[in-house]
Length: 360
Image (cartoon, rainbow, N blue to C red; front, side):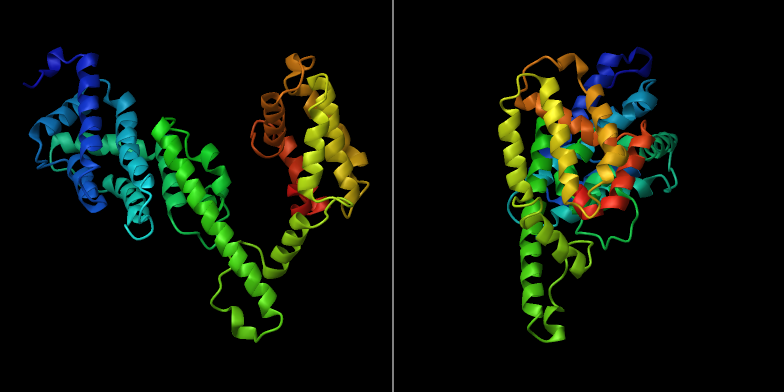
């Protein structure tokens, strides 16, 4: 029986929301992506002639309620992730089954919905709510999910967010803003592993082709795509830098392992910070600008480390503390718009030491 809006409570509103979630949780296991997209269209975008009249009535009550402006975005956002996460967790036939396309198509259909003319007062209100949703951060996060599902772009876009499919190691940090569920984390991790494995395969294939190309005809590499945004010469230099002896007689990996051995015996967090500062600043001596650190960077580095978790300075170092310290130090350089001067330091590092050396 339908609940009159005059007596419609927040408990009723939550119950109707759960009906929507249960509906998509049920059908995602028995219908194809095409069928689910049509179902999503009929309910949320066209908003008419939905075969399940009780569910359509539940959506109408949600849309007409006084909580719709505040909560509708959360509801449709969760319905989207119910489908996307399920698609991403299908191990078999990811490429051939159309699951990549389904994620992109779902997000695209939402963006087109606001331009469709309403056919009734109920659909007019639904259009308003959808329009508000596609202007919200939740929809931006869904767009990032869609880009991560697409094949690699050509790199002509200047925004890093639009190139997210090229950086799978960033997926846990960029794709879970509005989906912190366990299944969401599993889905993102699985897609991350797929992308990393594919990139490693494509990179290995391209590097081998580069090596063969030196002794073969100019057209020998035409069928092997470069999986990076670097020119061939830049890529070869980066591979040499990261796989060879980058710091004297040590590779980056060997230097990092030596540092971890040393900090394991640090008596306190404050001592570990000094060891971390020395580890990073001493590496500059192997760059093409060995005196760069003494100009300003070394002092800046010490100042940033002093500000990180000062209340823990006298606590014995442990792996979580080291991880937090390194994470916050990276945020100082590249992730915090509240500290633009620090980002300028990152740009200065790249300008003076080169992008490859700075990342290393």
